[in-house]
Length: 476
Ligand code: CTP
Image (cartoon, rainbow, N blue to C red; front, side, top):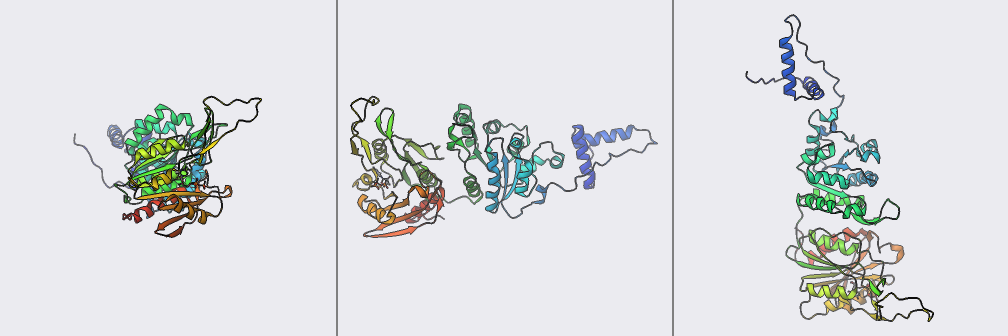
């Protein structure tokens, strides 16, 4: 028998057919076949009864309405972790950037935050169920997957990432992720042991190979008492900035073909095998510069002292302990086009560091003799062979910021110096923000470019843009 195509059914009837088919676990086509068969088999006297139209939802799901039309659209998938509460702030941060936000929550996420709250903040109902008649009328998960410009998953739990890596689709979130052809940004959040687990590492590596973008996790305190390490979800401001960057047209790569060396973090100078001298540097500014330079297309090597930060994407990272190790690694990396010395190198080391743990004795306090460490920035600035074209130092000062930084610029022989006030009240050491002045040397003159307070990522982006402009590669 020939197949039958029925046209000109009104929308309400189509909707009732779809719902009836879904309830009976059949395709719409099979459902129509059943109706026709029942009608044909019914006694001639009895008129064939069309299915009673079920109540059609008063309003169509908003995704079809192109709510937020004109604005870039972000679908925020909230996973089930304690960091889910931060997703609520993320909704606001994304909206601050003029983005339209639609939320989807996993079942586990609903244990941490209410869909109603996410929906109220997003100005649109929050989607939770794969088999939700309201949204599944019209293959909702497919529409949700496509009717967006970017999908952000925050927090992305280890389980959600494992499912993504394997291509599971057993709930609304994973079905959307499998059905989408839009960019996806993951903000992982989990216990440090889960993040360090070989299975998680495999899954993240697979997802990156699949083209998924990842931001974080950061290091720091965990929700669990006495637990710390890498696994904290990136801050909502950072995630919103990363989402915004992905929604912008593909970035110019003004530093493509440029080799850049960056130092970051503190150094640890041993006193004996178990003790060391250190400082409060977190390494965040240096890591942010390395990441921004890599994003601008440079080939970046980052030599870092001991810090709790994940390797920035696309950057070769060499981890060292002491100032002398750092200098040795920097020297093996030369020649490079540009060198940026953001590390807070310890000025002194212990001359007579013990090979065994120094013990308390009746003879009194141990005498620690200090000797000066090599100055890596000055060493590289004063090279006559293999000197980078542009050498940039940092000046960490607690008083007379500009005067001290100007003197440092001249004394060390670098081309630029980025001066920042690291007094405890500024919160720069270990914090996420920085206020810098960039001093550039032009023969005997020094020009000062003072920037407003910015996040360390923003400082990094601005510094990379300034480098690109100065080296003749302004962003397109
Ligand atoms: N620096 C370096 N090697 C050192 C000390 C500092 O490469 N042994 C670099 C830092 O990476 C930074 C710059 O020199 O780019 C200035 O560091 P800063 O700590 O501000 O100054 P110091 O040189 O240590 O001088 P002072 O402690 O007297 O301020």
